[in-house]
Image (cartoon, rainbow, N blue to C red; front, side):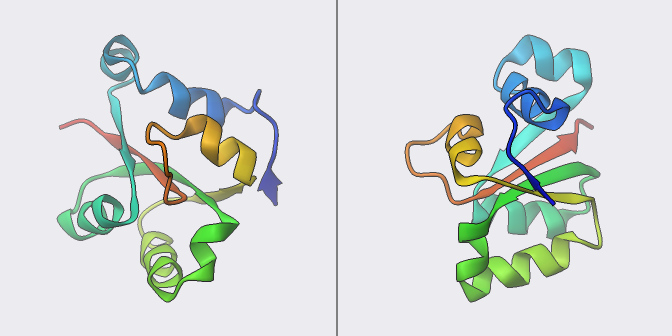
Length: 102
């Protein structure tokens, strides 16, 4: 199932985590990008959920990352336009995680 609605709760939450007040209220922070997601998976951080775009699956590194992340949290595919909407960078890599603050 692909999330393609901007009104989805997970999309709204991921977008809200850009702001400090929302991160503090939710007790979460966002992780964006392949390398940071790999580090988060290896570090033992508690991951609440992840969002990814189909473009991430086009590369072997992306497929391996998703396979490893599936053991740590639920993952949801999102459409490419939503990937650009939730991204905090100009060139999103297609992976976004919500992790619990420690």
